Image (cartoon, rainbow, N blue to C red; front, side, top):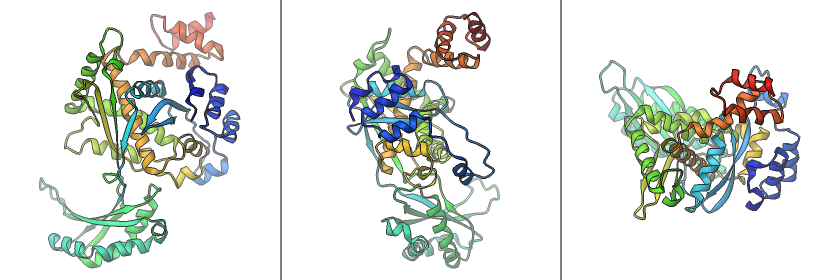
Length: 428
C-alpha cells in the first residue's frame, strides 16, 4: 500500500477519495468504477433471496478509517455506520497509536461451540461420565454429519459436559449440556454446527436416557478470542492544557471507573462497539451475534465491566489492551453475495478469519482510546458537534455547498437545533 496517496484523505472530494484508494493499491480499477457509479446496492433478486417479504434496501453510509498499522501492516478499515464522528475518531486514534508502533494482535486458533442440552436425565453425574467416555464416538458422528468441513481441514475437535442447575433452588429442573468444540475454518459456522448438533443428538439421548431439548450453536464465542494491544508514548497524548502524563493518568482512572461501575461500563463498551460493529456490518458478518457474545464476556466475572484495560509501562507510556470473543467468518452468508461486503474484504486485503478478528479488536481499542481521551480532556461534544451541525443542515434542507455554510454558522449560534438550522438556511 502506498500510504502517501492517502494523505489528508478526509479533505478530498468523493471522487478524489475513490481515486486515492485506487492509486494507493487498496482497490482495483473495477472497484473504483463500482464506487464512482454508486453501484454497491443490492438488486431486487438478491435482496428477495436474502430475506423474506423483501420490500427494498436500507442503506448505511460506508466509509473508511485511515492510519491503522496492525501487526506492522498498513490497513484501510471499511466501516458501515450512521453515527457521526466514529470514523473520524478511529482514524485520529490510529494516527496517535501509530507513533508507538501501532497495534499488535494475538488470535489463537479459534473454535466454535455447539450444544446439545438434555432434560429428563436420571443420574446427572453418571450420565456425564458416560458421555465423556464416548467422546471419540460422538466426535466421529458429528464429523460424519458434515463431511465437507472435515475435507476442508476442520471439524469437531473436543467435547465437554456441563450439569446445569439453579443454585438458588427455585424449582427449575437440572439439565445436561454437551458442548462440542468445532473448527469451522473460515466460516462463522452456524449451519455447520447446527447440522452436527442435530446429527449427534439421538446418540447422546441413547447414551444418557435423556431427551434432547436444544441442539444449536452457542454465540458465546469463548473459544474465539482476539486480543489487540498498543503502547502510546506519553508525549503523544499532550493536548490543550493537559500534559501527556496527565492525559495518560486520566485515561487509566476513567477505565478504572468503568471497571467498577456498570452504569459507566455500558457506555464505555458501547463506544468500543461503535467501531467493531461498523466493521462487522461492512464485512457482512452477524453484528447481533458479536454484540451478544461481547456483552456476555464483559459480565463473565459476575458484574458487567470494562472490556479494555489501560495502564502505565515502566517507561511511563500508556499501554492498552482489548480482548473480544468474535463469532465471525470470511465466507458464507451475506459475505459471498453482498457487493459492499465483498468490496470491504478487498479493502482489508482479503484477511483470513483470524486476521479479521485482530482487525476488529484493534478498531475497538482505537475507538475506546479516542472516546475516553476526549471525555477526560475537552469533553465528547467538541468532536461530535461539527458532524451533528452538518446533519442538522441537511435535515433543514441544505444542499451542496449550503451544507457546510449552514453548519459553520450553526456552530456559532446560541442553540444548535433544527429550528436554528432552518433560520440560517432561510437567511442564506
